[in-house]
Amino acid sequence: GAVVSQHPSRVICKSGTSVKIECRSLDFQATTMFWYRQFPKQSLMLMATSNEGSKATYEQGVEKDKFLINHASLTLSTLTVTSAHPEDSSFYICSARESLRTDTQYFGPGTRLTVL
Amino acid sequence: AQKITQTQPGMFVQEKEAVTLDCTYDTSDPSYGLFWYKQPSSGEMIFLIYQGSYDQQNATEGRYSLNFQKARKSANLVISASQLGDSAMYFCAMREGGTGGFKTIFGAGTRLFVKA
Image (cartoon, rainbow over all chains, first blue to last red; front, side, top):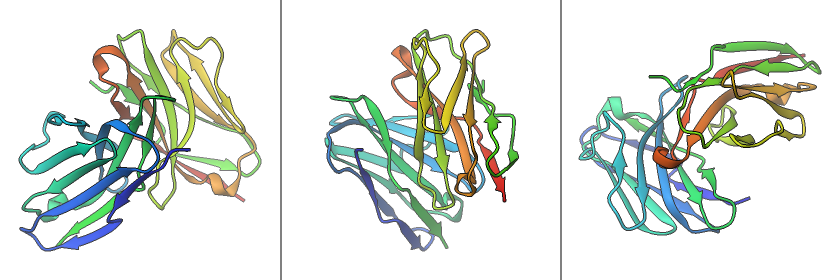
């Protein structure tokens, strides 16, 4: 099946710094990518939907200035957590829609962010 | 309003027995898809099975089957012949067509414990 990668898999940063997480579709073009956040023992919460070449659509309650999403190409989307705080510590999962052949959504392996 | 409901926070099953994980959903969109994902402790989201709203027959994938009852808006996952490796979190998810914008939303999850 199609593969979606995320980098880094784990990151620890100091409070106040910014962290960028990359999501790549390795063998297909993803016109749409999604970013989810998952707190321990909870479900995945959709943060935003990004379409290549256009601005991301954020879910209610998600600060767009804090979670910057860039979907600059059909295979890459980035999520930047700006001025990170300990409460931003979470598991971030991206997913990419393969729309040409199977119209299936594939998930990345996730990035665990810890803000000290 | 919660669109995906999983009422079982945790379930126990004896190895080699079958288990049913419950899921109900709510949508007014006639076109939608229902998914089940498995999330082991590693965090990756593993796709298990898909049911389209217009599919006439219940989906099956190996030991997984989806008991789709459209009028009741339920999409229960049945795992037959449970194995120790089935112990994980299981999420039911729904993707709405049309105005849903293809985004997939998740239920709260059910943690399955398989006993030897």
